[in-house]
Image: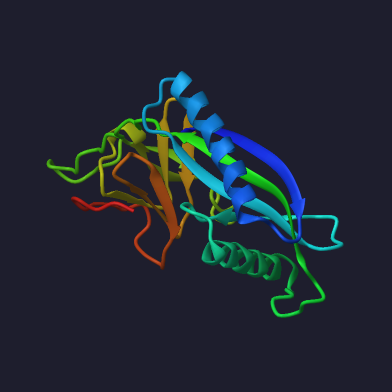
Length: 214
């Protein structure tokens, strides 16, 4: 995860002075950048937000505030975001009702230090013969059928695009996946098993498809 430090300044007003708001944001952004640079980040990012409410309410709604200079367009955008967020959360808004003034409560800045994320290796597709089971074991998926021999696959044998259809079992060290009838397990590019329900098919079969992932 990126490193993230949050800074907040309470500034309660129904008629904000844009110059004052700009000064507060500049001060918070300066603190955020200085802290991240001390931690060794050379390209910190600052994101603004504000907590607003309708006058008389006891709770606020936090909305993102645009970057750049503060002007009337900036103020109108923040108010529009507040009305939209309030309506989305509570089902109503007072966009055009002057009896319900909007009150600014907190100004916030998040200082973000982006990290270099490691590249996640991808598994190769199957170049050799199709995937085959390594024997079987008695499994009971349905008490009416009782214990029946089902194919067993090893997780380590699966390659990108391999699909195992249930009923079957996939084993690995420390874990066992019982694949019920009507389900498939597909190995994606990173070795995850994506399990889906499918239509009626031949039980216990396995297929191999090259270069596919989910």
